[in-house]
Length: 293
Length: 194
Image (tube, rainbow over all chains, first blue to last red; front, side, top):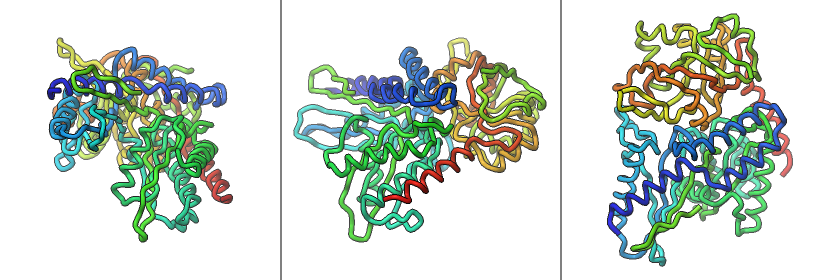
């Protein structure tokens, strides 16, 4: 595979992520409409969201104008060059920006000047891992700024919330994070939660959890139960779509666990907006790219 | 859904309350972080006619330049408004704005400003970039494009049936305060059990 071949596939991957919402997210939004009171602002917001999803696909244009930070998880076979894959992803981001699939979204933090081409220091953000498979697989997420701003990391115990170092403590801080976010993360959202780890690995794992399909059930029975309970209780908070009040505040909760130091107990929450843009591609040497949902 | 023509007078604005669904038609201007700082720190005469009596839209659009030099809004949803909280009430007062469009609501200072000057906070659906871009019929002018870049520039646009919800009004009403209080009570209830 040449760099150019990778670039072409990655531009298409970005186009799919930016303009087509994953089917499970669309289905969850459709189901939510019926739960809201007829004529309410919540119902109206959800209908606008669904119109928008359809229109974006039809126009091949970004679902949201904040096309987010492109975050990619790349699995590669032994011997593949991560430098080449990184360069191809950066090139693809620039091309996708030229094509208006992405907004020029990288700003120099010191001068305040927009780089203009969508790429910048740390943008796109790429995670690499070698695997036994002979294919390259890329999972891409476009993580918007509004929802990134409401992400939060708690340090347990937390006396304000009566949260100790156990799963009940996790439940308490996660619910608090939803109240703090209100509608600002563009509710209804999906929560990626990491229990444990350090300040960096916690956020990384919380984002990784957001790659799971909404219907994916945690393999750990205790965590699966907590995920379901938090989804139910999160919706009982009544924040609703856009924070207008209503029945639909969350579309999903996904929890991952990392080991921790005896001294630390972090609970890290990444909030993903309703425009839960994720897409995947699998590229085998010499073969056509396979698109993953 | 009621239609509201822009520019608009104070009396009309004061008759509108929280909970109303509106469709805006007429001229408005976009402005976000850099724009608000600029509007306060360097009051610019030439921009006055574009703000008076209309609304400022917290939006960083994706914009395409056409072969004839004109511009088209490709994607144009709202950005989070609270970042403009330090500036908003003063920008409304100084430039005679009748409203703000954004998402997530704003704080007490802005709410007081809406009451004092007669203006509304209008919530657009966050992320609905295509539905909202479709309502933008024409780009009339742009300020500070070179200096601020596409998302932060001040775009003067003509809209038709641009959908918004009134979530803060000129009588001290704020849907955001109501929802926040209620959710805090619910949280208390959920934390009372383990």
